[in-house]
Image (cartoon, rainbow, N blue to C red):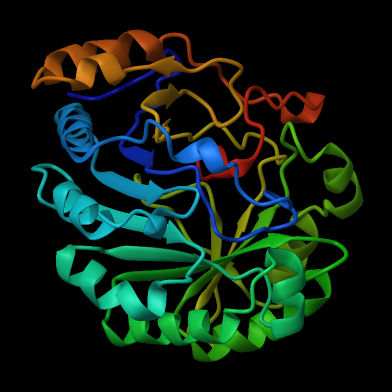
Amino acid sequence: MQLTDRYARRFHYLRLSITESCNFKCNYCLPDGMDCGSRRDELTLPEIERLVYAFALAGTQKVRITGGEPSLRRDLTEIIRICKDTPGIREVAITTNGYRLERDIESWHAAGLDAVNVSVDSLDTGTFQMITGDSRLPSILRGIEKALSLNLPKVKLNAVLLRGYNFGEFDQFLSYVKDHPVALRFIELMQTGDNRKYYQQQHVSGSVIQRRLEQTGWQRIQKSKTAGPAQEYAHPDFAGKLGLIMPYSKDFCADCNRLRVSSRAELFMCLFAAQHQSLRHLLQDDAPDAVIEFLQQTLHNKEAAHHLHEEFTGATRHLAMIGG
């Protein structure tokens, strides 16, 4: 069985948010900190198990656990195990700000984690703190080293491009990738409901870096069917890879392969959709066929593309709502 929309796009990839809460105050996402009421109504373990099982029956092969910051959930290790033990799920990944990475990566790995994406918006301690409001960068970098020592199949770093903060650090990022077998991806800042003015001040197109890569011998890598939206590049002289996530680029949505479910069991057809439909009522008993039917029916209404170019951000106030 395959989840397919009216544009013949196939969906093999579930991005599952397990909390909206985050303990960082990134100035592009939650500059004033998290909403203290955002821990209400989070998905329970039985609901997660039923949800992932239904998605797997419908052809999903990859689950990425996101937030907010997913490691704020004390049962994260069990959630990883539930996802990994689900028949049909081949890859379990997590996106984290890294604050518990050094302490917990071994237990996550033992539970079945295949891949970790760590947000590292700067390799400079001072700049990192200005962006995130947190001083844990040394611990986060040690956590990345520990993840590499465990031989996780995929260790990735995410950096949101910000004109006034890290845009001038390209050479520093390049030096890191030369010696570390990680995939470092630059993400274009996206406009959300809460950051319009900040977006206008800080947005910079990833095409600037793309041209630089292509002019200095970096070669584009073909993506797998469960890969995310990054355009990745490799160079024979570098241990790691570089990637670009450019949501404002032409045809960005043409190969969309992922669906999102929020920590409150809302199905997001698109990160920037105006409305989201709850499927929580379908997760109260073991009825995967009802979940699959719901997904198939809802997919018929998925649009061909987002409308970010028209400054339409839908119901997404900030990226902590659904993990980007």
